[in-house]
Every structure is written in C-alpha cells, then in structure tokens.
Length: 82
Image 1 (cartoon, rainbow, N blue to C red):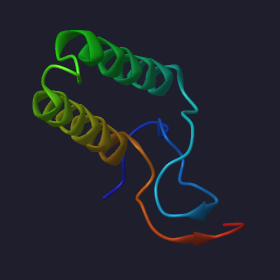
Image 2: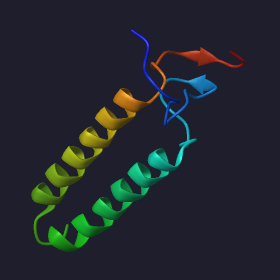
Image 3: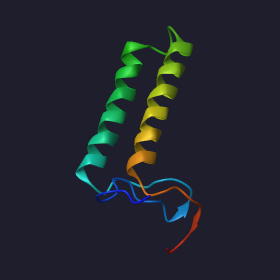
C-alpha cells in the first residue's frame, strides 16, 4: 500500500527503526514527545510514584512509536546503503 506524501521519519541506514525527522511535521511530533516526557517528570514524580511514572513513560513512548510507524518508512533491517 502506497502512503501519500513524504515520510516524516526515514528508515535508519543501519539497523531497524527510524532516524531523525525530515519534515516539519516529524519535528513537531518529536518535540511534542520530548515535551510530554519532561512534563511527565513533573506530573508523576519518579521519587513519589515510580510505577505511575514508568507507565506514563511507556504509554507516551508507545504512542510515539505508533506515529513513527504510521508516518515513517516501513521498518526493516538495513545494512547500509539502500
């Protein structure tokens, strides 16, 4: 299935996954992800509730992973040049 428009996240040259964003939408998604992680440290202080902080961090990371999967190149293992 072809995806319309450019990918927000290109595939990594080596390994599995995605590299840094190549579109402004990808950069916004990455900055929102980082901001949510920082906010989580204040909303769920790890010293007071490590489990709630861990759950929040895992959920935020999972959602960002879904964004990368939906808007990035199809993930596969790469050994260098395409």
